[in-house]
Length: 178
Image (tube, rainbow, N blue to C red; front, side, top):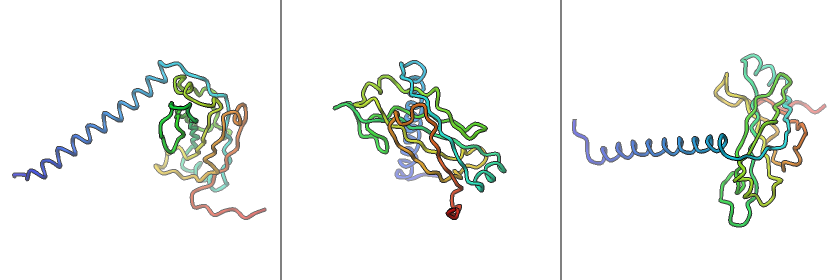
């Protein structure tokens, strides 16, 4: 069966695009991993996030064996000429860290590090942390939680503290005020 030149061009373009995006993804992931393993880093001050689930959320997650994941994104403002437009992050993205909550529903960030080379580009070393809390997607492919975050504050406001985040199931009605 003969294919028109336009159809063949479309197939070739699609294959080349797939190959390009695969190399792009592998290249960006492998350079990030290599930077974390071999590059010099700066320790992020220790902090913790205590997740308080609504009764319905706690029952649902427990019944399906789901956990809660807390993600911390680290970024900040750049020295003049050192940043790049990087939405939704600030001009210097330092990386992120993820922690599952423990049996007490607390995620402890006590071993987080950021690349020294990026940290040196910050205009203020009191960089930002943005917290996002979600279901871990182990038992269900969708996020099941709606939480009081993202919380975005300077690192010094987190240092040595436990910050509370309240979560409920997505579409769970608000509980009546007490």
